[in-house]
Image (cartoon, rainbow, N blue to C red; front, side, top):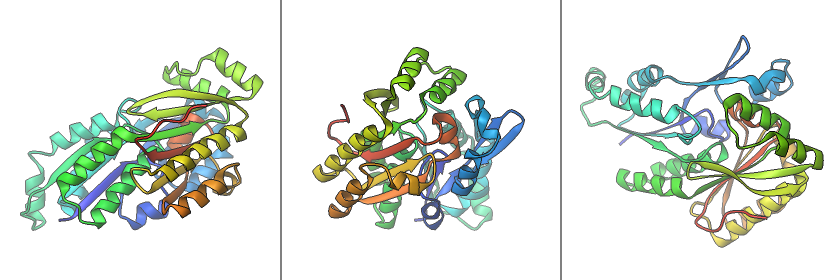
Length: 314
């Protein structure tokens, strides 16, 4: 049984991991003025973007997910031939049309995939399941890593599906933005009222940083802490405590809107790495996707874990 795993561009995992594990990517296109940028999760391209003139207008960007037709063509042109079972893990449907587009595409191939497989000499059944991770960025990475782990352990497909559903309900993604004014401008461009103008102005003036929590498809602030570094330290201390208590998966995903060496110098990082090593928890570090950075601004930190314990608060 050949099991395929598909994620979209917003899923924050190291590029070499995605390539080595054969994870298939649904790219997202970003339109900034007249410029069109394809997000293929290339960290060098993302870091180059940060310092480009185009980045000055990033808050006005439009993100364009693969259409139903484009996803259908990918399914028929590649997935139905390369795999027998596919899990397509998408960013939360409350933040993107990718889940709905992929679901429609999965129905669109029902009458077409059999001739394609037969022509390739494949007479075995094919199944495709589109799953909403109910998370975003580093949070999505947790589900993808667990899907790879289960595939390598040859876990039965029904058990894989049930496990991924369970993880989606218990994944926590935390984000700390550096620039509240950017986040406010971006939210206004998208019609998102989660960061008000007055709170952004007040937060910037007082250097108050919100800790945003994405869980079960909803994103909301769970803490406000003075200073980016103290906020990061408190968040990473919480994650370290959850690691010591026992996560649902031996995985912590970190993504950062900038060079990873910069992230590794943040307060609390070294202690978290030591805790993870002591408890045999693997840490996956990646430069945030271009799509993610456009939406939350450079210098933001995101942490993803799967945990039944209490969420972060301060």
